[in-house]
Length: 324
Image (cartoon, rainbow, N blue to C red; front, side, top):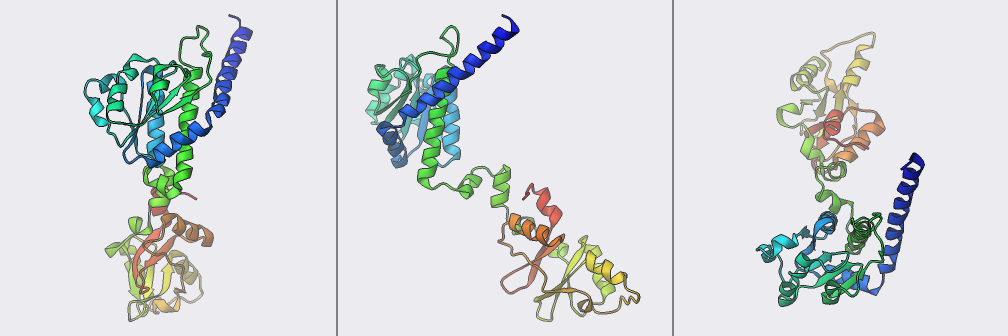
């Protein structure tokens, strides 16, 4: 084939696959609603199955369902008839993927599903197939030809299956009121999970790493406390232990730039009063917003009695992978 022919063939395949996806919209009817209601009422798991390329789509759909609020896993039909059928109960819902609806391995599990009255959703392009006729809800795709020039390799059919599977998962997500926090709980390793799950208490410095001095402490001694804790700031408290100020590296540099410097003066004379603070249950991303907004590096962390119990540094938040 010439270069022009290869380009033309590639574009034709893309158009065929795009048409297959576009035709999935025809499946969104009352049967689609029945499928959604079955899964919403499911007390067990939504289990996907399929053989070959359709099975790979089933695995992906199960993963998408599980990560968006619908407990789900994939069962290989070949393994199922050799013992894995025990994973399936009458409280589950099965979604079976098969383009022609006549896949032998999938059909062999149908008697088991019927015995336990496990609801079956069929995703197939053949309304007259045994799979479609045996299902509680047949979702019939309109894929008459594969993008493969031999009309053999699963291409357009599996693309359509994937689009329908994603549609089922996302409609379920919306129906359940599944929000960003729910998604984050299932993706703690991702950036969204870190943003929505990491609290100030998870990353703040506390104990000996949380410098705190009395407001009568000489500036020189306060600097020593800061240096010893390896922090570039210290919280300042009154006699009752409540936060009254904050003394950071910037405050020190501004004080040292004066004509007269006396390091024996109380820290209370040069500290920043009414500083911005964080709470231990505050989300770390909120603390980052405060730091960025006021162009500061550290925040004292206080409890309900306004007692400094920790300190959070800008670098602690960024090292946790949290960004605005």
